[in-house]
Amino acid sequence: MTSNSTRTDSAYDVVLIGGGVMSATLGALLKLLQPDWSIGLFGRLDDVAQESSNAWNNAGTGHSALCELNYTPERADGSIDISKAVGVNEAFQVSRQFWAYLVESGVISSPRDFLNPIPHMSFVWGDENCDYLRRRYEALKDHPLFSGMRFSTDPAQLKQWMPLVMEGRKAGTPLAATWIASGTDVNFGALTHLLVDFLSQQSGFDLKLGHEVQDLKRDEAGTWQVSVRDLATNHALKVAARFVFIGAGGGALPLLQKTGIPESKGVGGFPVSGQFLRCTNPDVAAHHHAKVYGKASVGAPPMSVPHLDTRVIDGKAGLLFGPYAGFSTKFLKHGSLWDLPKSIHMDNLGAMLAVARDNMPLTRYLIQQVLQSNEARLAALRDFVPTARAEDWELIVAGQRVQVIKKDEKKGGVLQFGTEVVTGANGTVAALLGASPGASTAVPIMLTVIRKCFPGELPRWDAKLKEMIPSFGGSLADRPDLCAQVHEHTTRVLLLEG
Image (cartoon, rainbow, N blue to C red):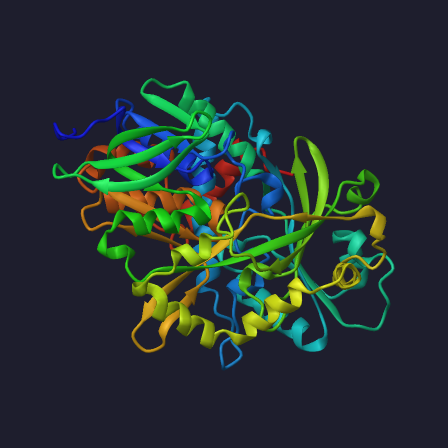
């Protein structure tokens, strides 16, 4: 595997960098597909799922476009474009299929350890927004992936769906909401631990926590030489790998840049931090059982859509409201203030300057959010919870997100919201960049990695992939019968009947 002149402390078929749900998902998929492959997972912190996969560092929505209005933009003619919503929903159905397979095969003993049924709602006020939501509902209600969605402007019905949101609300303002029972709350931190626990029980898997990957170089034989430092002993290690996946959240960009692959050139990152108001008062939490999404402010990034979420973490229900966006030059919550400056190189400087020039509304929005007072945060909360008391809510810092910046021939550079897989032309390295919908679509994203990086193995793996994911290779949106069958099956296996 390695050249004679290169000292190695260990060698693997696959090295996974980062201890989050993405690395854990890819590791589980590859181990199930190819049990004899050796896999090493390297995480910088002392436990897995401590950054964006941590339960309190993300909203755990189970993004399926059931309630997120930014996935259904309005066209110039007033019609609603549902194409992105369909794509996001289908991606989440792929994740559900894989999770159901893990439960049925005994890899996960109970889906309740990470997954709970929670209705998803969209909620708006004002004549214009209510009209938009009605048209959105009409565009989605007959699609097989959105079966069961309901719409109402009746305050009595809205009070049944979301009593905490309606309590104390003044009459006279037009209100509208959609409600669908098939939503979920996902504890991605717990899921990550379950997947890593499974991997740790398999032969040929090594979990190396407290180990920081510092460099990656490809040797003459085509093998990746990964430079690692044991943070406890400060001992330097050299690890060899045939394939490397960089799934280190915001820390993926600097490592991708160090690979030197042509595909890494011109790529930059824009970090966006976030905060939530959290309520763990059981009396308050008992009055709200839904994830309620509103409309984003003008100039706000899609990841800043306000929402009031029921969270079920370690068996206890709580509430999150936010996010309140902010800015930090860190790429990780446990990162360095030098992360952003160190990521700027001559090949991406032009794109980053162009993005700064073309996104002044976003810049103003972030400045306003950073300077926001506690009273202003509570005022935003009371748009959703009119009776909210300051003493029931605490401010917590969420996970750090790094949005992708790429070169663009016309604009010089564009800021992208979403997730993107960057792979080397030879398929021996892949990196995941970006944010939402992120963890909810971890399985289809990792299937993209597999398709791009292991095309020669796919014929052998095809049957197993279809066993794990019945819709693999096709589309549920175009096959209503299969869609209904898969949805019924995963609902039953994952105990999502409600």
